[in-house]
Figure 1 (spheres, rainbow, N blue to C red):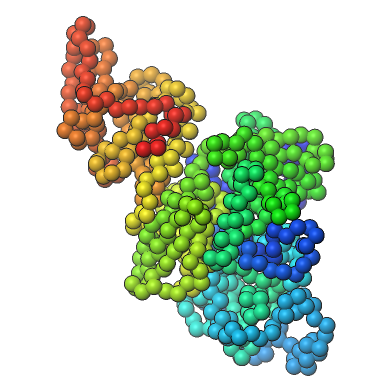
Figure 2 (cartoon, rainbow, N blue to C red):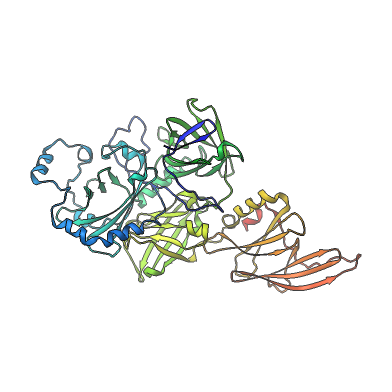
Length: 592
């Protein structure tokens, strides 16, 4: 078992992950889970066997799942033969009859598992395709079989890669314990109204619960999906009590040279009282589940985590005007670790969770001739959506999607997962998976944005990074260089004439800042008299130059307008409309 040290803190390394920090990232691993049990119940009522539609998500990159799917698709002939004979996990009628007479336990005892209702069970079980989640609370229920990991699991049930009738692919991804991860193929048994796979794998539907139930040799658990109802519960649990204490989501870093380089990433497991907490040091990474503190019906955003038997408390401090924590404290509850760790919110990345409206718009999936419309509601902090294929709307399990995961780089619903990680970090396409269509992952493109430009979301993190390096030797302005209604950021920074640079950024289709070029020297900026771009005026030791700066598509263009010398008693040239600038730590210009 690997260990890492944060001064006196010894931590068991449960899983090794890579994290997205802007500028130095390989990939993003994100967690998201749903909740079958009522997470808001008090300790006096936790033994009640009631269920709610509280949901949560557990997200991980699915970019590597296709190879496993292809192997299953290639071996379908052998797999068919296993269904022509009796399966190794099927029980004889005699054994089944004996078991039916036994005292009911697990789901049977709690919820009347297997009892018929008026709902068409056959129709429901034959169409299980979608995205589902479980949470750590599921392990405390009688419906959970197997070793308890205090983990969160995502299930993506998709049509087979070759769309073969009566076959499906189930991708299983756990937040912590990767031994639970699997990609399996199942076949529908219409007679028994269930999906079956090798190794005692079953997917059933319980009409009384209104839930799918998955069983393999390690676990048996109910599956939750993100629905309109559960998303509303997410909104209440996530927002209703946020005034009492600050939300902790984000990345927090130690001061340089402190705590063995400790960085803490905290991601809300929506609809529950859990966080996914990742602790990264120079020696490795540990992932644990953090449990929010509750008092009666109230859920607080501070949380506790357990690392190698030591319990730590995490709370947010140094709140900004929106009551978002700009720092956290991590300390031992019972004195096992005498140190208290203070970490500031990192400014080295774009935080999509704090700027969710940039994701609204119409997306096209060319390989499927499909479109998906995302509409963000600021009040609820939720998305509504619809999906069309070949110009025709398709039926969906839900109409509500949620921004989730590490840095808010994913949108998840019961019907799809959209992953923005590669686009934000590397400029490549957004990835989308729609299980009801295929187990494949497709590229999609934002065709039109549904929102006005959020300049804070696009440019503030760029200004923060520049100010850290140049301080008050760094100024900026916003100006629409190509008259398309969207302003560009012009960031002026340097220490002297020799190294001074003016970097220009545009707002791309996803609402993010994208560098498009630069021009040199410390200059004064004016609106071009003819309305075409700006004039950059430079003067030094009797020499002066005027350069027109314009934007053509995604390219920056320069045109020399004037180059002259002046007498010692003359002033450098000026123009009527000088462009206002601000220091890089003054974000007032980003509001307009």
